[in-house]
Amino acid sequence: MKIVVMCGMGLGTSAILKVNAERALERLEIDASVQATDVAGVRAAAADAQVILTSSELVDAIGKTNADVIVINNYFDVDELVVKLEIALGS
Amino acid sequence: MPLPHLPLDAITIGAHADGWPAAITAAGDALVRSGAATSAYTERMIEVIREFGAYIVIAPGLALAHARPGADVLMDGLCVVTLAEPVAFGHPHNDPVSVIVGLAVTSADDHLQFVAELANVFNDPTVIPALAGATTAEFVQSVFGTTAS
Image (tube, rainbow over all chains, first blue to last red):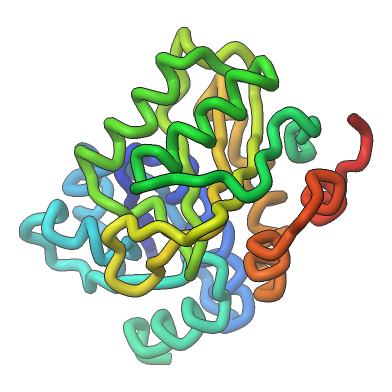
């Protein structure tokens, strides 16, 4: 399973989201890889991904995708990530 | 890699900003003061928000100001600015912002571990309000686990 985290530049904010998404997946005992990317790279990165995690500000920049797009409000709130990932991944 | 050193001159308490560009500029000034970046980096941090929006407001009250590595980044650096009056960045959930953490990195590949450390600090939900109410730079240093100046 693959999860993509996207921010404007693919570093900094997406790296924080990646770290905390991995913590949430560990708590859910879900085995998945988490890849950080930027707006320019999201289409390629998400081609084989189940889920894209990003900010509400960047949803429109994703364009067409088969992945579930999940908006994260507080990047430091692992509980928010656990709840939203659990719903999206249906476990 | 631990968090980069957070020297006292990279911390501004109670800055006055009349809008988000002034708030980002205060963070850029702190990075310039501490020797991490030149003022060109400040302009690039502002450009990121103009291009992509307020997505850098990643938690209630907190903006992570940053741009890509570049010639205007002199060394890895961190700065913290608290605002006397919170400022709206245009984020639907996390406005208004009262704490800005500025980040300058020399290499995109090497910064992951250091961002993990940042996550460790801020995963404690009491940290943002504590920083917002900080009255001394020394207190801010202690929150980030660095006391040397």
